Image (cartoon, rainbow, N blue to C red; front, side, top):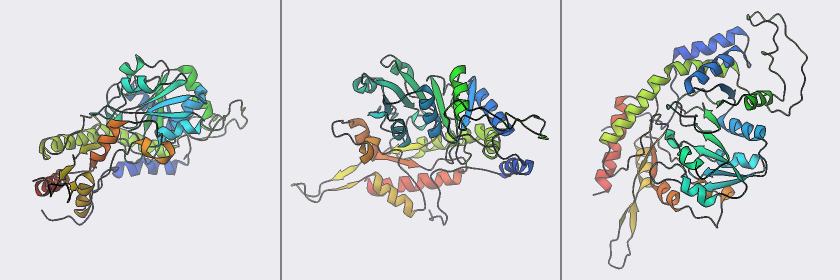
Amino acid sequence: MEVRKNPLKVLGPHGDESDVQAIREVILSGWWGKGPKVEEFEQEFAKLVGAKHAISVTSNSHGQDLVMKAMGFKGVDVINPTMSFIATAEIPLWNDCTSNLVDVDKVNLNMTAEEVEKWKKPNSEVLIAVNMAGVPAPIDEIRKVFGGYIIEDCAHSCYREGAGTKGDVAVWSFQAVKTLPIGDGGMITLNDDKLASKLREMLWFGVASTWSRAADKSGTRPGYAWDYHVDTLGYKCYMIDIMAALGLSQLKKLPKFLETRRHIQKRYNEELSPVIERPAYSDTVQYYCARLPEKKHNFAPDGTGFSSIGRDQLIDYLADKKIHTSVHFKPLHLYELMKDDNKKLPVSEKEWVKLITLPTHSGMTDDDIDYVVYWVNKFIEDEYK
């Protein structure tokens, strides 16, 4: 097969003229900040996930941070999985908490109840349950061994039925490569009225939004209540209408996006070489995290002439064929910031070196899938004889 001229990206958003028009309407309206589109987006997202409240924020990370601050968690131990993006481990540090990394299940790479029970401490009050690649974390099992507050990280779960319903609160991501991308942004969903009210107060330095203080909601904006009181310490992490308008537009396309992702998953599962280990099934297919076991050769009886073929070689090979790949994720406890020499997490350490994320996004065609399958299988055919 001829090598393509333009690279095939591993992840990315997919937009069209309807998205452009949605943003155009907001720009021409003159109301660019937090306003009617944010309200509408929150309402539609709450319906989607079956939550009483949906509170839009600037990112999933800010959502987690805001929840921890609103709940008053400070100086406590926070349990989270080592297989995740670094934000999961750093956010507790923002709140002077310890980040307690635990190992994961070999198949789906989610944290396990056994690991939570093994590593929990007397002051382990919070747990961040990441639904890895959209596969649900076993929160029901975790609750049997952990009685603290659970934040369900649904960054990869938009939308899988039942996602966001197991934790005490859920946080979502609309970052540029997610299943519902708007460039960045996030959402907090919950059923707790008191906490929802507090979170909304904290979105903008404890100040009620200009839109909420407007005297007229018809769109003519003749005036608004300029005065306000501030009795809560707040931050600045609210979503704006430009982002929300894109979110509403992308939300209409979400079923089709997910259909495409599942189609890619199905074809990879059916057509890739059996040498490739398939990931656990995902409804959202946020990532297709395949695994390539290392093949070792000893060219002499004494073991000299050792060489190996594995994930990194495949990454380089596919890059040469204009196929971008990635790795999701390097275990967090291997980073200098999070390193703990007294903690061994063998499953993640063994499995992550096999991981390679193959292209999976809503803009892919069957020709793109053919191209990936051909070159992955060609590598296996040539190198794993």
